[in-house]
Image (tube, rainbow over all chains, first blue to last red; front, top):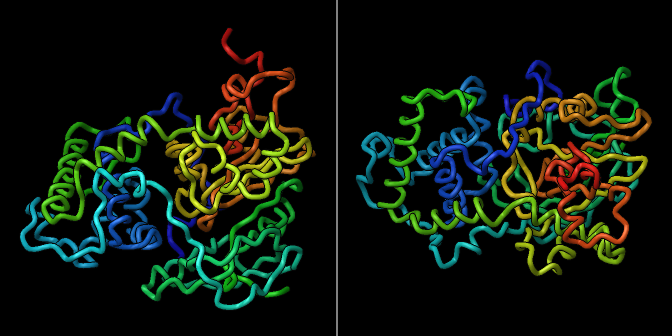
Amino acid sequence: MNGIHDMGGMDGFGKVEVEANEPPFHERWEGRVLAMQRALGYAGAWHIDDSRFSQEALPPQTYLAASYYWRWALGMQKNLIERGFVAADEIAAGHALRPAKPLPRKLTADVVQAGMTRSSFFRQQQAPARFKPGDRVRTMNIHPQTHTRLPRYARDKLGTVELIHGCHAFPDSVATDRGDDPQWLYTVVFDGCEIWGADADPTLKISIDAFEPYLELA
Amino acid sequence: MADHDHDPHHEHGSELSETQLRVRALETILTEKGYVDPAALDAIVEAYETKVGPRNGAAVVARAWTDPAFKQALLKDATAAVATLGHVSPVGDHLVAVENTSGRHNMVVCTLCSCYPWEVLGLPPVWYKSAPYRSRAVKDPRGVLADFGVSLPKETEIRVWDSTAETRFLVLPTRPAGTEGWSEERLADLVTRDSMIGTGLARSPAEMPR
């Protein structure tokens, strides 16, 4: 979706502010939110792209105003309710009011390391890769209202395939409950001026990781 | 849920306690329903507070600086190469190391959310996840570098890697001059988190406290 999350190239947000000696969490609740998200992911409640989409779909003013882990909490709550794991009246009550909807598994203290190890996104290929390093490609001019990982600034642009990363679960399909729909993944590199025009820094090159459906041969 | 102040340092007491209460209530519901185990949540928080951090990435970089075969393996398949270093926590399948050279400087961003190589760098800092960095890194990377006090020769190619998929990027910074013969452990102290994101350079020996 063309949401507020798709920030690449926007102006006006100001200087990057660095905090010296920043702690992992600024407040205790932030760590709890991260850990709950991790545990629910391990349990199979939803996929990482569902988490991303739930945040992208927040009203833009909420997205911008929320601190990072609060945005996670809002997205998590949205997914919990929409997917029938928790009901709004339970959130209001602060307690479970009815039995749980079963989940495939549960993250317990004895398997925490497994829960913290990043899962693999490699999937069995459905067809040979259409592109190879060195191919000139054009990104699609697409504007789906659902989740996509093709940023707006990189749509309808001419680039070069640089790397092939194998066949991966396709976020656009995963986040619309259409399954993994495995697709080849490529690093595609663009000249700065292809993206930002003649005034761009001539030494700038930008790459995205693009799934095959985002690309056509140029 | 109520809107929340953007900057955690400027939160008002009442809003903060409301956030805490809401998150606590959510944990209570999830625990009562059997979806989460509070002991597992404790262990996750503890691991991110104490075990997973940029020391892991610094060890990888220091090894690459001292062992040419390892460096070659790292640039070819970072996941496999890092797995050979037993003391570094296991990384996912999709780690890619990108090397800074005299002609090219690499910088990593996630314009769409906050993708970051947690296993080698720990949790991302607030600035990495912030709108200023996400918006400007792809358009004005030299301006962003200036915010970090870094200035590169004007002919140096700047390569920005936008982490738009599950691939994760680790920058292999240039080894500082004057470190010939240094041990891996000593070299690792020169490798800052920001140098592995590409918003900084490795420290020079002169920058180290005596």
